Length: 517
Image (cartoon, rainbow, N blue to C red; front, side, top):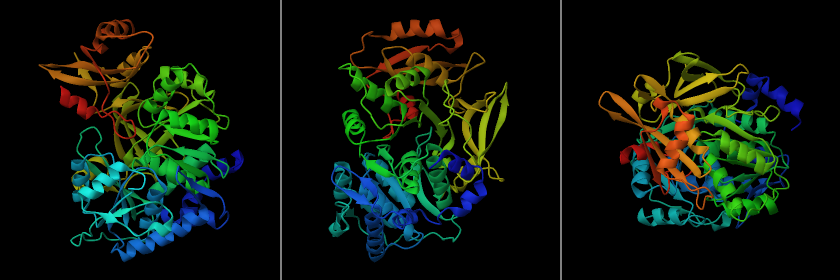
């Protein structure tokens, strides 16, 4: 899309909202009506045009209806990124049911907990692309569906839950739930975030317009679609704009490099850990990045530090864009702009249509509250948690401490619940992590607080780069921090670990580190 056209649309958010489809399930048909032969999905085994995708969605809707799915039911999709997942996601939406997208790499206990809490009517497994999905399917008594004619690969279908009651439906896209995404947040306790059709389509539209996605774009989709970042921004955003999704079930640096070099990938979005591991793959043989069509690179999902940003921009030869969001905001709240990349690690200005305020803060830092068409409906079957997260007048309390600079760019200082108070001073883990990550031997780090009598200590967990030229240990990293941090911010203890615990997206799970303490 031309820059001026995108700008005009983003300048009129009410008109943008009014023009959105009513249902995410209509996205394939929307493009098929004007460009049926354009490629919609590509994976290792197959590819589908928009016309083929729309036909597969219609056929899958029929099969799901015949299997007993009703409007208001929860349909659980145990998945890794593949064509079958996209088809089932859209087909479920077309029936007025909710998609419960769950990564197949979750443990059996995690899958069972989510399935039970959501009271899923039916569970489907994308077994054609995922050995983990197949293992879950066999464990749960699922059987292979006779859906080979859909051309989307093998799918297993679990037993119908006849005790499941459908939820009420609404003709209003802003009130009708489209997807139920479970997030552990900082507590480790899963919460089901209810996102409406308008929530997801608003982010799909705005993110694609800000990236200027069009029919010539090939978007590398390795961020799990079971995560809201991969679902709304990457998957639905690309389909909204009529681009092509290059689906990859798991992040493999070698595969990414081959796709960048040989497949014409134009957009690559990842979490910081993905970018770091990609550079590590390049650094081993000291080879340059080969990405002739790459035009946009983005980092999100967890904090981007200055060292990785500089390294990335040198490697990609492009700005490494940054952004911020959360599952409860579908997810995007802010992001840097194509025409105005930031030299620091701010997460850019608010996206169009979003309001923000800083609550309960001082010195220009406070808890970020946001309001807009991206804010969730609430937590499923948890009114108390919903009341704690959403104000009566629609403000989402993000739990993140933030500030705005003089240019209007947002800076995330740290999680309110992760704030460490040491000897009366506030210590924001992100600041300590950025210092540790700047060490040439450090791949990534995570900082948490440890209560001691009358105080808190700063504890850092560090994952080192394999084969780093300048090896490090606890003592050298402590000396590095001492030179760069005030005494009260320095880690009391530094633990080097083989690998930091992370979600499928690469986001570090700090609640698991607390368990170690």
